[in-house]
Image 1 (cartoon, helix red, strand yellow):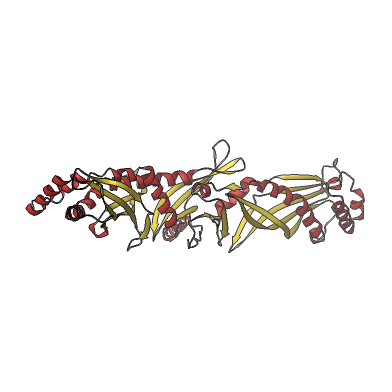
Image 2 (cartoon, rainbow, N blue to C red):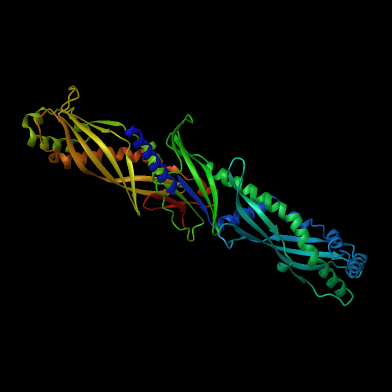
Length: 476
């Protein structure tokens, strides 16, 4: 009864701890305002927003808006319509989209500057009368949660084009006959143009945002090849923080047959997020995700080396070291002496601020010849290597530098008990000469961060926090 109560209490304490803990996602992809602006601008172009502006029904707009039961305005419209043959946008351009945070830092205020030339034809003159128009459409983006399935996505919460952003000026000097007519046209456009821009352009802005959201999902879900395996990211939830979009990502490691080898979900494992600063975007991967990618390239395995043939100098030094322990054993070492190196467990990547190490648990055995079945001895070595990331284009590559035998244990011996520290230097050199080149060769394939090039950047850069790997575009 007591054990049952104890178990219940422990479960309650664990649940309370998890509820209070801040869970971190396996990876976080943060888009800065520069990238958001470029992606939205591109989406507007692909949705033919400029052509929509050029097709604005301006004549219909001035007929509908100003009349509103006001006789003076109605007569002004009729007077203008009697004197012009047509009124339309002759050229239009969408300038660089601007992204700013909302007052609560949980929405994005997107300003879309519009630059247009509106012209009209009148029997009063032979040339087209043109006006330069500058205005801004403003949209608000927020994160919306679906009430049914609790999924979240980026949505357009509002869109408008106010008179306050409208500026109209004549492009050319006009004769005294046309000038009053041009002024009247401009007066009618002031109330009517914002309404028609809003009705025609806002649906396009909404479609552009929806497509940008889908493009971002495709961008982060592109498989990341890692040897024969690949890493897949998927969206857990989006968030808006200040003037950036943050995509919290789940991850899974799959083999070549698309079987999941390991899932990564939100957990209490820490994830230190660096500031975006001036970087266009950052991809931050939790330490356990990066570790799994490394293990996929250098899984636990066994090496067998004919030491006298491959590394004769080390073979002589090994014999000399063994002779200190047992002269008889040293004399038994033949030209076919074998050293086996077994990586007992998956290597572990240890991150620190700006530094990385790889720890490995190694079992090393020495056989007198290739014919004997029992080794002279078996050593357990706790080894570590300095790890260095570097990039080639969008390829992120890890390499191991040097090796240190931090602790060495005698697991068994057929040549009597001895202090394994006597063999520490020679075994460390064997590991450096055999293990490191093999592992660096496998690590050489690295992992491709395709989103770097998909976002228009040539190369990636990297940095480390105390518990994460951070990828950003390289400075040009």
